[in-house]
Image (cartoon, rainbow, N blue to C red; front, side, top):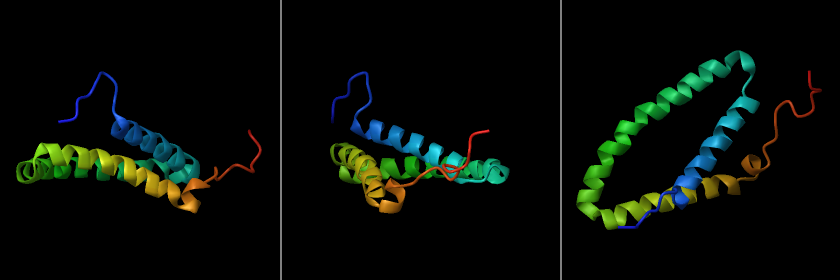
Length: 103
């Protein structure tokens, strides 16, 4: 098992970074008149998948052992945002209203 201190590990930091970037992107790219609906679908989908992940974690840990599952989950938490940032369209994303004057 990987020991953890009081602060989050690299996987926690990657997930936090992803969450901030996702929320910022949605708020700056989605038109205001549909933002609430899009956010509701996003939250509903995220909440719906949480029990699925938790249901799969137990059998995976039982079959493979926690000493393999936990590092794999941490690696996935680091690799997925890195892969997403490797996509030029995502890495270079700018505010949809970047050219509009402030009101």
